[in-house]
Image 1 (cartoon, rainbow, N blue to C red):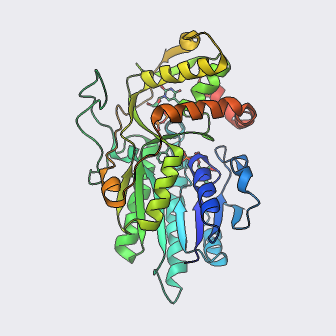
Image 2 (cartoon, protein in one colour; image 1 turned 45 degrees about the horizontal axis):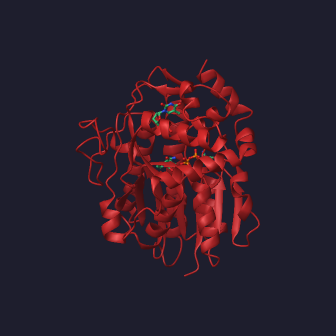
Image 3 (cartoon, helix red, strand yellow; image 1 turned 45 degrees about the vertical axis):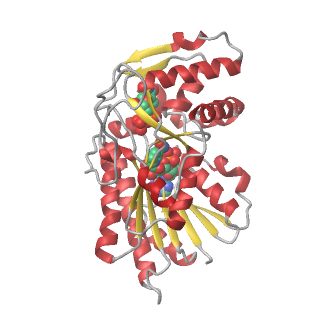
Length: 362
Ligand code: NAD
Ligand code: TYD
């Protein structure tokens, strides 16, 4: 079936991988990318596909309901993959309001624009889908009951049926948006889907997040600010594996349902940081361990969630998904990409971001 798919936040980290995948893999679809181009959105991330015939970029704010109504109508949108959001926990601690505005009100305006347009068609919701991309962080934090030895570092995992218990303003705003999405399914019968994915890593991630920030700092001989004791655990997935899961779920997932996405790949921050240091030093030709001295333990993040660990058994059992990359290979590819794309890094870390970064660490 011919699809006109609206992808929001397509100039951001994960969105750019999703847009690229859909534009290349489905030449018969029209992919419309709506992005406001905040500090985190960058059209350079999509240079390789910007001239594709089946691709349109629109600079717009998802919070503007009239604009979103117009996009739905004008491009006769059949499916929405909604990624646009404010996504960085530290920023949410400093300025929660923009998170409520974009993540909650923005999602609500997307839902409303999609509902109004689809309800106005003779076939209604048939063949339509609103797919909302969420995070594992909405489930809250898990205990570190087995902190020593090999992962997993605890007995519990996040499963789809777990009650939401968000702690940060970021995760609270994502939880709220997830609830709105389900409410549109339950109230209006709109076909919606929600997926909750673990931490992503890979090319084009804005260097305020742990992995690209630390690669950049090592490259520049800057300190590596490790929050608290570095004992917090995150579950990491290569971004293209997330994009692959989104593709599969968009086409095969059951409307109204929820799927967790993750690769059972838990790392304590400090162990992960040592792998990054080792890989960057090796690729830069530095003596082994040279950059270990850059590690600096700093004041912990407020309300820092201790452990995230996703159970993605449902996605594996029902749709046959599994990650394609081993972590070692993913990290190697990622570090190489950032070292090879120094100019990208320099450009995205100039201007506004630089100011924020300096204020944050002063
Ligand atoms: P990102 O910050 O890199 O990109 C967000 C994009 O949204 C940017 O291009 C930005 O310009 C755009 N945007 C922000 N506000 C907008 C607005 N009002 N209107 C239109 N566009 C707007 O984020 P990301 O890491 O790629 O995350 C994408 C989605 O995936 C988010 O919904 C996030 O919650 C979710 N997610 C992220 C991760 C992760 O590890 N990064 C993990 C699970 C889920
Ligand atoms: P981050 O990449 O911000 O993702 P999230 O908070 O959404 O999981 O951080 C990953 C982990 O790294 C998290 O436990 C916080 C920690 N961290 C640091 O120790 N130092 C840093 O400078 C940053 C950005 C994160």
